[in-house]
Image (cartoon, rainbow over all chains, first blue to last red):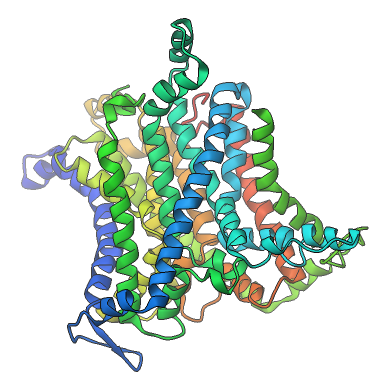
Length: 297
Length: 258
C-alpha cells in the first residue's frame, strides 16, 4: 500500500507524474525532430567532398544559394506557387467549410470525413490519380482526342498543372481547419447582425471572418508549409520549367550526395516556414475567437 | 452554394473514381467501352516486388503506429490530468511536428542518423521517423476525446485504494479506448502511405509508396491503377467503419454530434 518512502513520494507528486507521462513523448520529439533540425543547421555550414561531410566551417553553401540563379529561381518559384496555392485553397475552402458547418445538419460528419479521407491515401497515389485524369493519356485529353480536338496544352506538364495538383492535395487540410473553427462559431450572431440591418457580406467580413481567423490562419500555415517543400507534385505534373526548391533539395540528398548544400537548402526552407508562422502569430488573438477553450468545459 | 460544395467533391473524387474504373480495364488509355479484366490486379498480386513492399509497409506502419499511440496517449493524459508549469512547452512540442514539412523531417533525420548517431537507414529508424508525425496526429485525436473525460472517476478510484496503474487499466482505458484506436488507425494509415519521411531513412528497403513512385517515373501503368484502387478502398473502408461506429453511437471517438 502507500508507504512513506521516497518512491511513494515520487509517485504521489503530480509534477513528477506529469513528467513521467508527458516526458517520454516530449523527449522523443526533441530527439527525433529538434535535434535533427539542429544538426542540419550545423551541417549547412560544413563542406561536402566526394560524398563525405567535412567540418570545415564555411558560408559557401549559403553563398551558392544566394548567388547561383538556379537556386534563387527555384526558391522564388516555390514561394510564389505556395502563396498562390494557399490563397486558392482558402478561396475554395471557405465556402465549402461554411456550407457544411451552417447547412450540413445531420450530414456534417459524413461530409467532413468524406472530405478528409482522400488525404490519407498518400501523395504519390493521389498524383497517380490526377495524372490518370489530367495527364497526357488521361481521361480529359483522350476524350478530346477521340472527339477530334487537340489536347489542352496548359494541363500537360506545366506550372498550372503542378499548381492544380497542389491545390488538389492540400484543400482538405484547409477545409478541415476552417470547419473546426466554424463548428465553435455561434451563427446566431449573424441573425443579430441581420436584425441590426447589416447586409450578408458586411456581416461576413465584420463578424464571421474575424472570429474564425484562427482557423483560417492555421489552415493557411498547414497548406503553405508542405507546399513550399513539395517535391513530388512538380516532378510528376509539372514540366521542366516547374522544378521546385523541394525537388532540388531532394537531389542534394539523393543523386548528388551534397549534403552540406542540401542542409543549407533545408535550413532556408525551415527558416521561410518559421517566418510565415511568426508573421501570422501576432494577428492571432485567442480571446477574439469563438474558441473558449475546450479544457474549461 | 451547394453547387460549389458539389464541385469540390467532384474535384476530389473524380480522379479516384476514374482510377478505380480504369483499374478494371484492358486499355488504360481509353477504357471506353470497358473491356473488363482483372489482369492488373493479378499482376500486382503475382509481383514479388509489390509483395515485399507490402510486407515492409505493413511492418513499418504497425511499429510506427504503436509507438505513436503510446507516446501520444501518455502525453495527452499527462497534459490534461496534471497541472504543471511546463504544460505549454509540452503542448508546443507535441504539436510542432505538424508544422514541419515531411521532406524536411526525412532529410534531417537521415543526416542526423548517418552523421551524428552513425546508424544506417533501416526499418526501425523509419518507424521512429514516421512516429514523429504520428504522435502529433494521435495526440490531437486522443486530446479531443480526453477533454470530455471526467477525472473525478479516477479520484474516486484512488479513494478506494486503487494504485494509478490499476486505475488506468480498469477505469480510464475502457472509456477512452476508442480514441486510442482512432489514433492508432490514423498513424497507421499515415505511415503506410508516407513517401517523403520513409524514403530517405530506408535505404534500399522497398515500401509500397516508394515502389509506386519508382513505377510512376516510367509512366502510368495498369498495376499503378490497381494499387491506387486498393489503397483507396482500404482507406475508405476504415473511414466508413469509423463513421458507422460514430453515427450509431456504438463507439464515440469523442464525437458528440458535431
